[in-house]
Length: 221
Image (cartoon, rainbow, N blue to C red):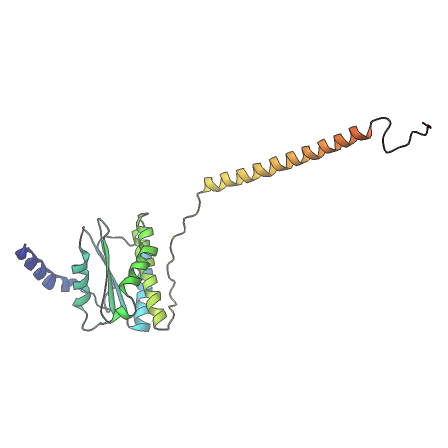
């Protein structure tokens, strides 16, 4: 077991720097192919603007296979370029079981704490993942992280930030709701009209009796 840990450590020490992120390079290494071209462009746009305005770097790495413990790899990717880029965070997601981890540099934790990151993941990332919308979940989660960093730097991002997907009711559901509403209105109108007619008939029967109580017959009694 100890030999395995040593081999793993050596692998991470020598292999991962080859894949280290640099702000001069792409902020995305999407080996699981989660992101569409549009999602990739959206992520790149707001992280580039975030770096320009705050010098905070946000990166994305997705593994093509399952990684049950993403923390060591994410931390190695983070630390590989830490000397020249102290404000940085790496979003890591594995491509099979979708384990995720956000590695945050010590300097960056002033702007994104682990608690904040987990709260944003629960609110924005996981709901999309549960619906198999991995790319959407990643870019919305990243956008919320970027907004939080920008707010604490007292700047505003001008890039178009992605929003969570709103799942509306399907067309058939709206049709059924409309049908029920129309049926209730028709039924109410019908019974209200029938009630008014019954009341008028009752008034006619009462008026038609002889002698009618509203009139004097004219004969002395």
